Length: 386
Image 1 (cartoon, one colour):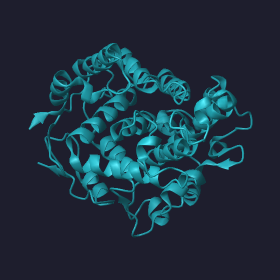
Image 2 (image 1 turned 180 degrees about the horizontal axis):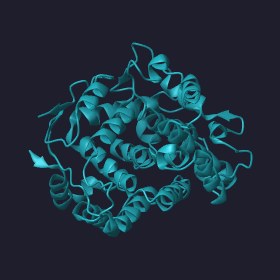
Image 3 (image 1 turned 90 degrees about the vertical axis):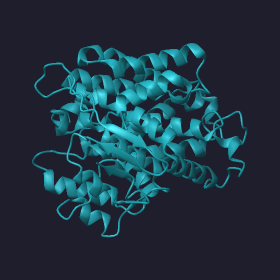
Image 4 (image 1 turned 30 degrees about the horizontal axis):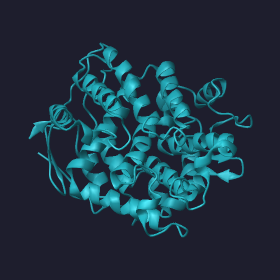
């Protein structure tokens, strides 16, 4: 077994293109990408990682020849930066790229994860009636399964905590979060006065759009239960809010630019982005974000909404499962609560197998992780702790 950070440093040193966007990057951009990675992984103090994290997030979200599709990335990056500025919570700022990196490792090193992701991607493409069964003509990214994975994963991993800015978990009154978003022109709808208003965009119910991709869970009921139980605290579930906020920003951007954006035509031309596929793909990302923080236990609100037989599926919910696993396992290089500035290493040893990973010296209690894995059909034994 090998320390997870040292493993990654060795991997990107010996084969940097495997952990970059090789189909999209010119060589100088690939060097920038891996350079930012090395700065983050080698850092020993939170103050000298923030700039590299910021550069890496911007690099991941705005490069790779996808500027037209990634127009919403400007909004996403600004929310990430705004939350850091308001709350000074560097922990989650560092958390985002590390989740992204861990997902890349699992995709590259674990055949089972890569297989499940690829099955979900192909099912998405072939499930659209007007799409040809020649899936190569309808990829959104670089004409490959890996490129398509990177398209989805960069959004899911970096945006899965956007909703913290409007929850008490960020140390803000949720209403203060809404006000900050409006003042900074990140929300352009004047009719939004409270958190509940975020769930609707024009004539769309964003929760129901996401729910259509999950089906086994009533998100509207879930939100109502949370409101009943946490009304006085004004607490909101950050996973669902992150998914809703992500979709809202995407809708805002495409509604604003749809008349001038040639990629949003749906004419079957392989040189254009298929509009229905883009919408379906972004909803898959929103689904992964929404599910990453929903838990099931006898005492949880989720239990009454999930049903006793609810499980995520390793193939049908592959991106959701990957995000949940990476979010649980990302424990290294977290800033300490005492504010000393020195990063808490919390590194652990890891070994990658085709259909499972082996972890030694994990710094946190593993019971919760193992219980969560039981809710992932096909991945119940994916992690072995020693």
